[in-house]
Length: 178
Image (cartoon, rainbow, N blue to C red; front, side, top):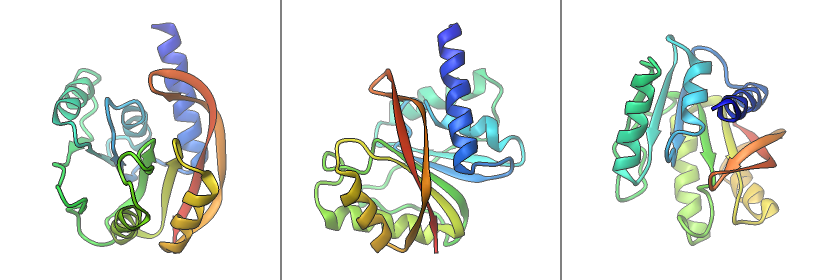
């Protein structure tokens, strides 16, 4: 349990360094079991919201239960859409977490990645953050695709991340919406 607390503390540090703040309205796209959604909810606090979206409905249910057990009332389920459309109004989010999602397994073509990036650009407020942990794809390729979708590269944040249930030192890419 102590190692889990340390890992979560490091994730909170990385997310804060990347720019997440209290009061943010965040989408964790491809949230899985909530490894990053729970720390994001702690950062956003009561005035903020973390919307969670994943194709695995059971993982979302488990995540919502985990949030309730931790007395986090700001984690809200979004139901996945088969066409990769994000069912939110334009300019409604301050940040999107896109960790271990934007790669060939889930989005096999550049066109499918472009579609989701355009959707995320649409729902983010101007200046909103796009945090990307690029796995299983070349960083320069994905950075170019993100830039072509209307995002500016701001920098990287490094530290201990979790990938496939294992701790690893890695970095996330930080972009903002133009």
